[in-house]
Image 1 (cartoon, helix red, strand yellow):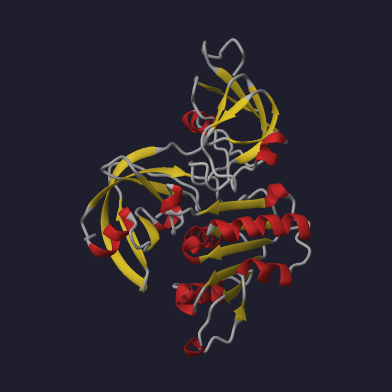
Image 2: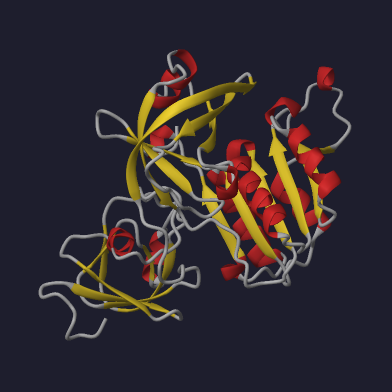
Length: 350
């Protein structure tokens, strides 16, 4: 977009090093403007809670709306970092973000979906399959997510747990958050054939296929869902880069598809699996790795300078991993790809 093409009364947003350019309306957050223009920048919760959309401002003026300090501290803001999900431009702005998707990203659609299957995977996790309209197409990258559009205008976000080739429906893994408006319904009242409205695909968490670097796939709890989709995609495409899955839970039952992972190991010589349990009880008879899952990665890989890391799960896990890997193990910041699940208290995924 040249300045001559820029709509009057808008600000021009340029993202380097990709050179992608789009316009933002007055009082419009940079991320919302990018999504509207089909420019995919990294993000997670879209509510100023997780920090996934944080990037460096190279020039211009950005004013932030409400956000949490764990997502963007005062020191980071003073150093020129912005949260695109709640940052509103007050001038033309140039940003640095190395995770911008290519031109022609998949279109975001609203559509009805029908619950076709509900499978209990553990005491607090269910697998749900949604049937999509037969007369429409829904394209997404393995690792992206959809949002449920609730009747009161609220939204709840869940990652697709199946790669696109395993469609045409989508698979979701939902953990019960007691008192959660949506998950209480899922676990007490949801029935097969029920209709839910969804919108997507969203998110910048997907495999970068222009690299041959070995990968660490880091998941906590139901953060396994998008990782599962990525593994399916790798197998389908014949991608043989070395990949090690570290999946963490409090107790063994939290690794609710452990058997699925072990079946993939027999089919994918490039895949390694390290399950990690933090709070095993004697009756679990757990014989495997213990402690925090992100620290197990550091124990095995003290030098991550030649790796890519794909991390998904609780914000405390993702944030701790990002900090430790980049400061202690030499991981380049732009090679850490993350999707942090926030809680209903954070106005997101519950």
